[in-house]
Structure formats: structure tokens, C-alpha cells
Length: 424
Picture 1 (cartoon, rainbow, N blue to C red):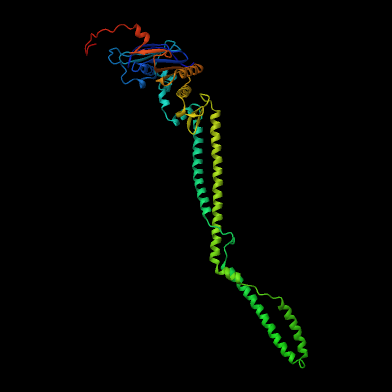
Picture 2 (picture 1 turned 135 degrees about the vertical axis):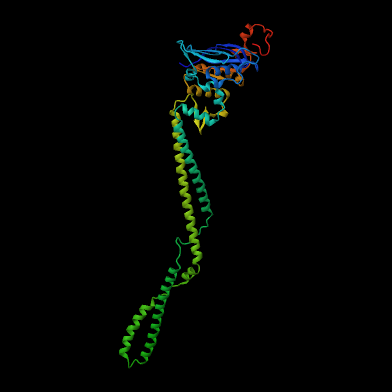
């Protein structure tokens, strides 16, 4: 059973003179009144009574009172909490009549229920961490977030390098007519020498032909005496003609041109090779970037699945990018009532035994929103005690000059002071 407040009595605390209140078991109990009448003092008194000395007001005794504070709260299970006397000593009595102390109260009192603004004023990441811890996925989600951050930073660096590589590759000059490989001057010279050697051999054959022709002429003139020699020479001449008639000299012009332009050719080849290497590097980094994007998406899907499987305290409540999100809206975009719903639901999950929360300054809500919030509280079985600068019908009780309205009516007329300073 979650603990709630059945009734309370408060006297001489801060601005309060005497207030009695029986809040609704479920839903919203609004303490109304004008400014500086003691509304917030009621909440501070409850927090002090149940939360201990850490919530004790710095000036607990009502100004002008010689009577010490008195706080009396009865919980729905019969537990009685009292603070009274000069030192405001705590007395806690459980339903069986046994006395107990602050430790018993701490078992069911949620500190954030007594100080809801502490949760509401926390930054987005702190709220998200509180939620993640209470649903039991905080450590795993933190691990996934760190993994995502690491992958994101790695992808960011890779992306920058990929852009630089691509830009560098695009700026490189490319010569489509240049050879694919670096040209060797030695190879060109060797080829030139081979051609010159073949051309030399051709020249030798031509010279041999010329010599044979001259010799043939001479032999012809001496035909009568050298018929036998003539026949032999005719055979040699026939052979030589056959060997020389199809010969064609090769041109070294292209090689000579290549030799003279080898530095320019090789410059273009290197430029093309550099551009191809730059484009290949750019492609490699682009592929790495795409791979890291896939890894980041995988981690984000794991985060979403982890949250989807968790038992969240409020439908539509989640964590995105490390911040609390409700109905798709981050905290700074939520309406006032949605913020209260989220805060109340989260605080309740922190300690399910605590069935109440204290809310200050609900004047920011219009009456319709108050009704909607109250209906949600009733549906959730939650008790909320709140203050509001108003004296309208939405208020459960009106505080005026430190008294609840009914107490004001019943209070006797003030008597003239008969005591003097230093006398009690």
C-alpha cells in the first residue's frame, strides 16, 4: 500500500498560525489564498515533519509567537507523526502503538516528493538519468551512448578526411593522352639503338648491293674471260636482290620526340597516378564513413529497443539524445501540466510506497488544466497537495493570515499582549 496523508494539523510554523487539513485520498488538493498568507508554509511544514531536519526552515517559529511549532500528521495506515516542544522533537508512532523514528519515515517518504522543484529544476540530462536509473536501463544506455559518441566522433573525423581527399582529388590535373606508367629514358634509348643497328645493317646490305653491282659491271666487261665467275656472281646478285628488295628503314622520329619530351610525359603520368590515388583514398574514406553510419544506426536502434522494452512510469515518456521526452516533446516544450505529470510519475516510481507529492505555485494552470491534472492523479491513485494564488472554487482550503478559513472563523479575537520582552 502506498503511503498518503489522511489529515494534518500545523501551528506556529513560518507564516502559519493554525491550519487543519484533510486532503483527498486521490487527486488534487489545492491550498488557496492570496500572497503571503501561509500557503507555501503548509508544504514546508509537511516536508519538515516527514523529511526530517534537512527540511527544517531556517526560521521555523512563526514571527511574534512565543509558542513553539506544532506539527501533527496522520497517514492512511494510521502512522502518526508529531513534532512539538521547544526543540520540535520528532515522535513517530506506528499503527500497533510502537514508537519509531525518522528511519521509519525514510522507508516510505520520497525526498523528491517533498521537494518536487528539485526534480523539475534539474537539467534535461539529469532528469533523463533519474528516469533511466529507476527503470533499470541507465548503465546499459550510458554504455550505448558512449559507444554512439565514439562512433560519431570517429565518423566525423573520417568524413572530414574523406571530404579533404575528394577535394584534393578533384583539384588534381589529369592528362587522358598520357601513358599509364612512367616512361624509362633508358628503354627509349635502347629501342633507338636497336633501330639504328637494324638501319645500319640495311645500309651495309645496300653497300654490299652497290659493291656487287660494281663488281658485276666489271665482270660483265670481262665476260669473255670470266664466264664461270659471271654465273656465280649472277647467283649471288639474285640472292642479294631478294634480300634487299623488301627492306624498309624504321623511323626513330617518335622515339626521339619521346626522349626529348620524357620529363613532360612522366610529369603527366605522375599527375594521373596521383589523381587516381587521391580518388581511391576518397572512395575508401567514403566507404568507412558509410560503415560508421551503419554502426551508429545500429547503436541507436539498440537504445530505442532498450527503452521500448523498459517499463516506463508514464505512457509516451522516453529518453532521446540523453534528454527526457514526453509525447515527442522535450522538457522545455512541454506544457505546465505535462511537466507536472512527468515529474510526479517519475518521483512516484522512485519510491512506489510514497503515494503523495507536494506541489507549489499552481497558479500557472488554468482551471480546466487543473481539472485534467487532478483527473490524471485520481486515475493513477496519487495524492497531490498543492498551493495556488487563488480564492476560487477550485481550492480545497483557503489560507488567510496564517489560518485556514474555518480556523479563521473559529479563532477567538486577539487579546492584548500582557507579556514583556524577556518574560514568558
